[in-house]
Length: 136
Image (cartoon, rainbow, N blue to C red):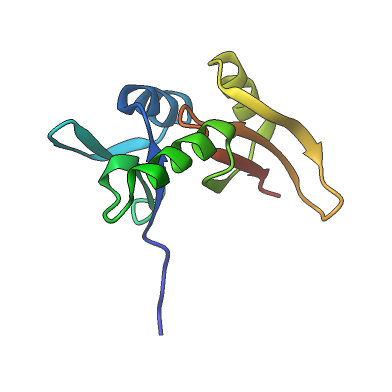
């Protein structure tokens, strides 16, 4: 059996801010940008990994959510406790400097973890937690 990770989903609250973060700061390419009414789905991914993507989705598009559930998700996103993704780079210090210079919200500066990796973390414009590990 051959199973790969094709895409994962992160919620967004502001499509333009998300584009500026994922495209302009992280250097991801925009693979799709789909609008439906006042909602927008943006698929981004690293240029060197054409088969792996993140789909930035509007919270309002989740079927079956009640108004209270949407409110709760928005509150959790604002605190950075709803969703996240792990990324990796060979030059953690350079990427950290680029994101910090781009006014991304720093959660943790680069640090050597006791479990054997060096990483840092940021929040994207919607509050999603991004942990970035250094590839060794």
